[in-house]
Image (cartoon, rainbow, N blue to C red):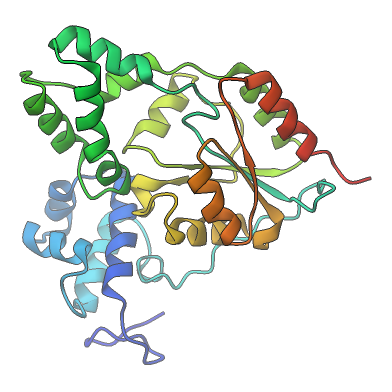
Amino acid sequence: MAMDEGGKSAKGGALDEKSLGKRLQAARRSSGMTQQMLCHKANLSYSTLAKIERGAIKSPSIFTVQTIAAALGTSLDALLGQENPARPALPKKVSKSGVRFVYFDVNGCLVHFFQQAFTKLAVETGEQPDVIESVYWHYNDAVCRGDMSLDDFNRTLAERLHSRSLDWSQYYLDAIEPIEEMQKLVAWASESYHIGLLTNIMPGFVSAMRSRGLLPNVPYDTIIDSSQVGAIKPEAEIYQIATEKAGVEPHEILLIDDSRANLMAAEHFGWRVLWFDDSRPAEATARVRAALEPAA
C-alpha cells in the first residue's frame, strides 16, 4: 500500500512506528544482516536505522523505508504490514477436538533442557552453577526478544563470570539432546496436520539446531522465532503473530509446551493447549498422540 511523504498510508491511516520497527528488525535478522551491514547497503546512518527499529522516529520518510526494503530484498508493503499472509490449505485430517494446526515448543519439548551447559560453564570458569544461572536468566528474555544482541550477551556473560570471552551458542548446542519420542511424533504429525515451531530462543539458534539435526527434519508451515518477531511467550503479541501465520481459527490451534504460563496465555487467546513433561517423554508423547487422533 502506498504512503505519502508524511508517513501515512494512501487510505489515510497513521504509520505505526513501533510495528514498522519490529517488522524491519525481523526482516533484517531473517536476511542475516547486522545493523551495520544494512546501513552500508542502504546508505543510511546507523543512528537513523537504530531509531527506526526502536520506533523512535515519528513518521519516517517513505523514501527511507523504500530504500531499506530494497536493500533487504523485500517489499514496501511487507515492511508496512500490508501484505496478506498466505493461508495454508486445509490439512488432510482434523483431530477429534477440531485441531488443524499444531505448534511445538522447542526447549523442553523437542530437546531436553540445557542444564549441562551451566555445569560445563561452572567447571571452566570456577563460578557456582547458581551464579551462572542467575546471570543467564537475568538477560535471557532480552536476548530472546531481540532487545539485546547475542554478541552483547556473550560479552556481558563473560564479564560477569570473569572470563575473557564466551560463546553461549556453543555451550547450548553442545548440551541439548533431542527428545527422540517427540522427534518421531513431529514427523508423524506433519503427515496429517500443519505444524510449526513457537519458541522463545536466541538469534540463529533454530537454524543452527536444524543444521545439526537436533530438530525434526520436516517441512514446517511456519517457525515463530521470538528473536525474529520481537516478542516472547507468554506475551499476547507472539500469539497474535502465530495465529495469523497459522491461517486457521484460534480454537483450531494446539500448542505443546512445557511452561504452564505459556499454555495459560495461549488458552486465554483461544488456543487448545497440552503440557509436555520432558522428564517422562514416553508418557507425555503418548498424550500428544492421543490428542491428535484424527476424526473419523
